[in-house]
Image (cartoon, rainbow, N blue to C red):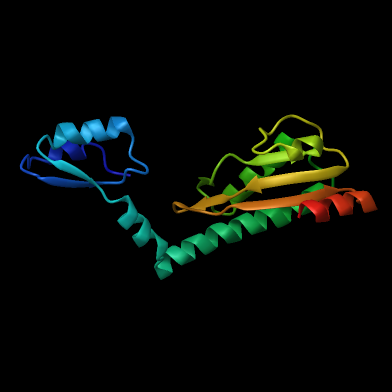
Length: 174
């Protein structure tokens, strides 16, 4: 994030070339840059940025690892909560995961947490609802964000004891 007011500090209107990331730059922001640098040619440098981002520094790897650790710990704690039947709905599960990740040091979640139970587990990107948890499959898609580095975990758990048919369905989909 850039500090507010940065554009007022730029007084060099002779800038001839500005590198932009076409993959993530909004039209509104591009228009703003064009007003700040009216004589500049805008060049897409997104492939170079992506190339640079592929290689992680030891410090970046530590942050990614921490995000993954937070996510894993929250999942393990959730399993205990589910076993003790302390959570009643999909939203309860999502709220628990998000709260627990923040308690463990996450600044936020990587994306909106998806919790899908029963038939909802078959819906890609299901919107977590107030559906009551019952015996059956429970799909979880969530992750912690730690110092701007994100984890992403997808897990399928079974509430109760799965039948042979449930196990066969799981193996087929796996």
